[in-house]
Image (cartoon, rainbow, N blue to C red; front, side, top):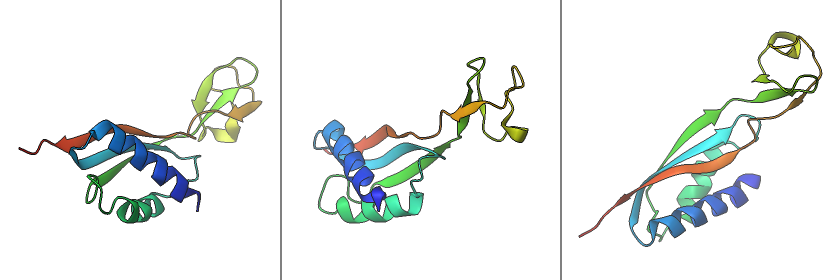
Amino acid sequence: MHELSITEAILDVVLRHAAGSRVTDVHLTVGELSSYVDDSIQLFWTELSRGTPAEGAMLHFKKQPGTLLCLVCGNEYPMDTPDFQCSSCGSAQAAPHGGRECYVDSIEVCAET
């Protein structure tokens, strides 16, 4: 249920930046290693945004692939590399690096007249 707290944070960011304007779309980047489930975020969004300027806004998810950081040469490379070997030096000594993020890329608002 950690999606509840991240969705609350997302809504807070969106409402602050919308400054009272009606929000129509929210574009999110979610890392594949973040363990956040898009459907759960969407479910909580529907409930949490009710009665706010973001009610009914569409969420758009962009997945950020996971990456590894080579502990030998410092190269960052995709996790789907065979045997987790560095594409630069061939070492298999690596640590998870990218793909844990979850953030708002952009929002779209409707300027009501």
